[in-house]
Amino acid sequence: MKPAPFDYVLAENAEQALAVLAQEGDAARVLAGGQSLVPMLNMRLARPGMVVDISRLHDLAAIHAGNHAISVGAMVRQADLLAHPHLADSHPLLAQALPWIGHPQTRAQGTVCGSLAHADPSAELPLLLTALDGSVTLRSRRGRRELSAVDFFLGMMTTDCAADEMIEQVRFPAKRPGAGYAFREFSRRDGDFAIVACAAAVTADGIELTLGGVGDRPHRRVWERLSGSALDDALNEFAWQSDARDDQHASARLRRDLVRSLGRQTIEEAQACRE
Amino acid sequence: MQRMKAGTDVPVTLRLNGRSVSGRAEPRTLLSDFLRHELGMTGTHIGCEHGVCGACTVRIDGRMARACLTFAVQADGRAVETVEGLAPETGRLSVLQEAFKRHFALQCGYCTPGILMSLDTLLRDEPDADEERITEVLGGHLCRCTGYAPIVAAALDAAARLRGDIEDV
Image (cartoon, rainbow over all chains, first blue to last red; front, side, top):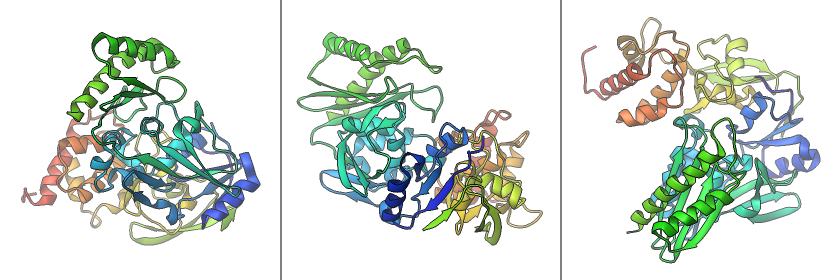
């Protein structure tokens, strides 16, 4: 339970970090808050030759709240986003869901972008970025590119982030006028990864449901207004199309059951928030 | 830019419970091991070493942190607080520690240092923390002896005393 040896670089600015990533490629991993990477190192599930610490890059610790979105830099801790003033007004889904991430102790250190880079399919943040149709800005010495959540998450702990890139910031679009949002999660214990998590948005035009914990990445589905048995049928179809996985925590069948029940509850709660 | 080679010790200097201390660590040395083996501060306990159990919880620059998810080199120049720093003086316990004693909020005591650091931080930052909030913060710790109820009772008692709602000792 100790990490394998690695070289360590303490970056003083983003350019230094990017230069090291460009030189080291796959051998290097970026260390921000450490709440996802360090457990992987301690368990030797990851054995990078070099760790690039960006925790002293204060430029990346900024939150910018605009009218249409909130931008969150690579060194913003989850607790800081949760404590951001007016988050519940501008981003009710984030305000509801962020307390479900880990524990207060891990949120005090863990970064928003770090959890997204880790891309655990049961983690809340990939689900939230997908649900809100957010985007990720990747930076390398070659330049910057912005990817939608759908294009960023490629599979189980796999993203489109290249070896020489790092997440510079992520962007969560703000609440749409007249929309209601809700988040629900089923896990064995408080603070555990989700067996199934659901985020719903209900607008005048329709229903959106995003699932976490079911398949190898978050899945989002948009329907026109549905209710009653038509909604049950839609949820059943979604459950079967989400590649629910069997693992030590739950069977695929339980996950599909939860999509049907928890999914419906989440949609109904979002509907109620709208009214 | 500081570059450190794997397997090579480098000096690490930090403020530990208000005093400047130094030691040596290689890049992969966890802060938990650095505190215990290099600095001899064995109050911080080590349980799971992947951030789940909470036994190694300390404060870094005023925020709760898992010492097992922090490298010693990252703590260079930072203010680190451990359970050894909670008592106001030798032979006297903090209000929270006294409450733990009064309510039998520990048995084997293995998880206690981490829980004390979390609850001390909570009561400092949120003096009005209620049972729900205390339970939420306690959720980041595993205790296999107490069943948690006496820990919650101790935290509520300490919170009331720190607010001045209860005056006697």
